[in-house]
Length: 301
Ligand SMILES: *[C@@H]1O[C@H](CO)[C@@H](O)[C@H](O)[C@H]1NC(C)=O
Ligand SMILES: *[C@@H]1O[C@H](CO)[C@@H](O)[C@H](O)[C@H]1NC(C)=O
Image (cartoon, rainbow, N blue to C red; front, side, top):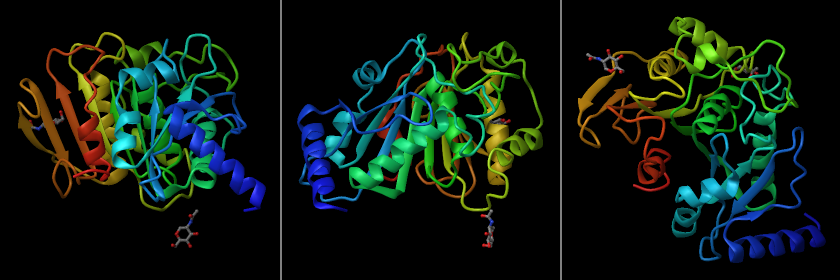
């Protein structure tokens, strides 16, 4: 790194630390026009820092979602970088519909977010081996997409009220249209596939990839009227196929009354490769469980 670059990184980092969440002006927003907002940990954390990408819902924004969730403050306390991508679309949604976004390095929003991670690694002392994503609704759909399209970048994701990766694929949707495509049959919980079909769809997002796949934590409310409840089971089918898991261990009333937890594979709710939470009677807005996210990511105990 040249001295001037080092200096500008330092200034950028100092500015970010002061302002908490700030627009990262030297991120070039390529290949789509998403803006990058970030908060870096205070200097007492030497780094390299884990990275948590927090992806907002439709009609949302980076600043709005950072106010509604606690990843910025928790990043200051626990020493991770919080990145909040900001949608370019008027409706505030992310593109989870085009072939571009559903393909590794395909030129869509998923690639722009992967580029934010790259920027954080190169300029903000981020740790490429501890990169995570969390999202709500459109952001949950995007987090599923990131897990499928960038298994080499993301180690674990946590999704609140999403759909399987590729469920929103819309024929003819492009990476630049606004609003991005909307897939009614998927949203309405009518797009049902076999686990193998869902798994194949993920494997085809990055053909030939044979490395480790991300771990997933999946939340969904049974009374969700926006991205209906069948999408919970379809996500579990998809990722249990991709990760080669079956026969979850289910526990009722965990962590809240009426919620059922399903742990797939070895380990507990913090370490297992796939964990689902079905929230009885809860609608589209599942209460954010930031502490559970950080424990699942291995950032906290
Ligand atoms: C798959 O794994 C093999 C053996 O580790 C490696 O040589 C090959 O490059 C990998 N393929 C891809 C596309 O990553
Ligand atoms: C455990 O929960 C999963 C996910 O909801 C479900 O598919 C499975 O049937 C449940 N298993 C039992 C034994 O109830």
